[in-house]
Amino acid sequence: MTTVTVSPKYQVVIPEDVRKSMGVRPGEKFQVMNYDGRVQLIPLRKMREMKGWLRGMDTALTREADRL
Image (cartoon, rainbow, N blue to C red; front, side, top):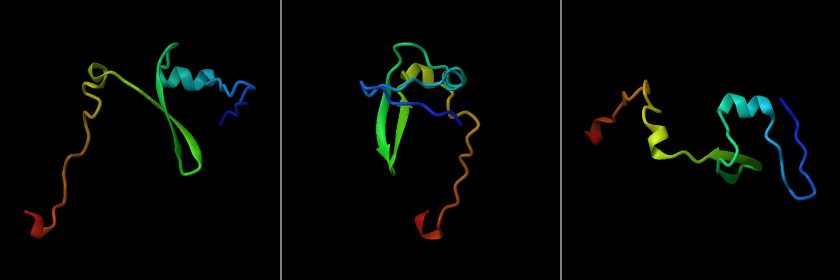
């Protein structure tokens, strides 16, 4: 785990190992959320980039008998 510091301008640098593993590029946009007392950065992706993103997901659902 890497530690980062908030600058006087409230900026944070994303560590190089995280940038490389996630493929973050300069100018990329993120949605910032406060979730359960922590800051989350969620990359905003174009729909074209999302093609095949859920490939291999288990789609089997167990349904309740009264819901059929």
